Image (cartoon, rainbow, N blue to C red; front, side, top):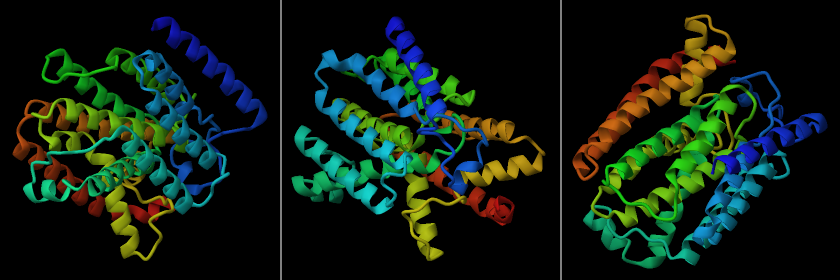
Length: 338
């Protein structure tokens, strides 16, 4: 594993130098929402690094996952290269990919702890569509929160740390996955991301959202005694960011399909930068760690009550309440984002 990650890191460093020399697949695409984090031109190869890291698990017969991950990586790369500019087309392709993966692997959710919803989901077609909707929310929500160094990679690194300790304590069981390998992979990307050496881009955020949604669904299906709302808690931030953004943009008569500079992390970034007169890089890292530290605390609390649905629901509502209050307070500073 160590040698695999070492050679993978060397490959990415060489690839990044090539891309910088050829001015290909770089972060400076001209989109205004991308300029909050850094003025540097950084290769968007985080998704490539993570995808190649998945090859470590090929011997575990997860070929359909590897193929689907590769397809969504290509889709994200086309988005990064501006070869697919239409957000609607990207969403349609995401939906087709996710539906195919769910149907091919016969992935379903059978127990949501909500009786009426379970009855509705007893229809396998509705079950597939519901699961597809949930995964798409995670994929695009992950893309929405990607804007600050280490925010997305740090968030999913925290989730993996929680999973690692739950597995270590035998609170949950896993199959076909080396958590240590994934942790090592994410830590390397986290370090490179914090140093402005590698960015995720759409490809990386799509891939993380997709792979974690599948991974956590698989965990729940293997550990049906845990509350499904614990899985929702782990993914609450990208999911709520997505849903909140759709509602916010519809209220403002804006298309929910296109990015802007009024996401939660961007408001906090702007406030911290101006309030404490910090440089972009410092405010960038501080904001990301502040958000991720809060989620770490919430996840630690939630991990102590993985079988208690009411506790998980309470924690989710606390998150939503605090998010909404902070957003309303900081929205008064939106003129500072211009």
